[in-house]
Image 1 (spheres, one colour):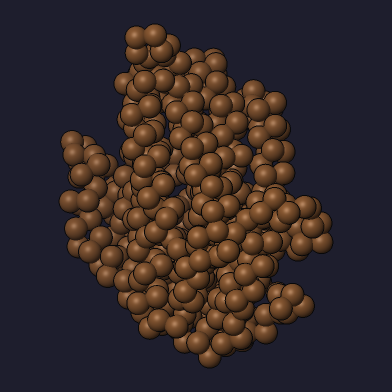
Image 2 (cartoon, rainbow, N blue to C red; image 1 turned 45 degrees about the vertical axis):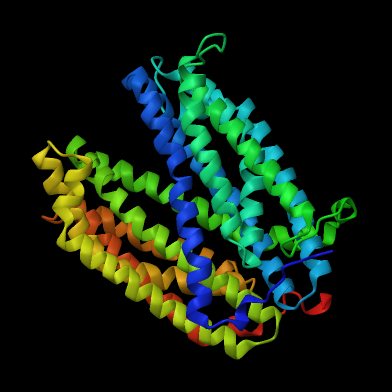
Length: 456
């Protein structure tokens, strides 16, 4: 029997947004510690070892982006059924999307493991790092099924208003990963050290634990989802529906990764200082993005629940308050970043004046557009909550592929701005994307969502 199914939208809107978004922001920050932990310990093996991990990162992020898309599809359906108080379909949706994401992850994992050598060759891995990178990448691909399963668990918990639970699991496994990394990398007593590959083994182990705990909670039936074995009987019609909801988001997230790879390549043409400036500056950007993502997911969850409950007025109210809140909060973070740009960059690169100056220039140019990033994410999550995931996909492709990349190239290569032209293109892209998203939002097609109409 399902317990603790308090319907969160009955709370004041601001309280609901904060109650959902703060744990999500914390979970995102803690989750980022996995990569930082790997870099910290592997860096003790030398530059070549760290390069082995670094060259694998874009590939792993691409796999994660694909998984996140399908997890969002599951959360969209779960949120709407939860809002409609159709708890049987909440459990059915959770089980079927878990089944779908397991199947997809097995395909990705198998193909990634088999073709890992060819992938590294395409990435330009040289003979010095090829073998160690190959071991790290293959173990990382084995962990994909656990990564995808836990993403799905996180999305389900968020969609029913219980984001605090994944935070506790992520915090525990991140701490365990910090302990296991040196153990598996360097070895201890009878435990052999695996070198660079040991970092991936530690992640595989901790992500496996997280996935198992998540499944145990879903089968426990205490938090709005009560999975039974019968729910996993394949419902191909439902899985097809979830697949085509999630596919555009997967394409969107993957597109963002490809764009950043191209942008970094463009930055690299201006030399090592430019790349280092970007590397330091992007850490500041990530903080704002994590806050924006937390607010946007909370917005999407509440909007989805209210659409499912046929409380459209409340969904509109939530979306407007959330968008305004995202703009104000991220604009404030942008203002602080602008004022303290040199201090923030100096924290990461304390002894390189050229990088401090370059990174500070980047932050000052980009920071004041943080509020528009918040608007874009907020509106995009409204569309996703309504099941209109193609809209954010088209918006991302339009704004980044047809605007940001050409503009970045033109401003940096054909004007006196140089590398600063790349930084200028980013806020202009953010403003354009938020403006187009607002226009699409006001057109109101998302208000006519019929995603679960025939299942209530």
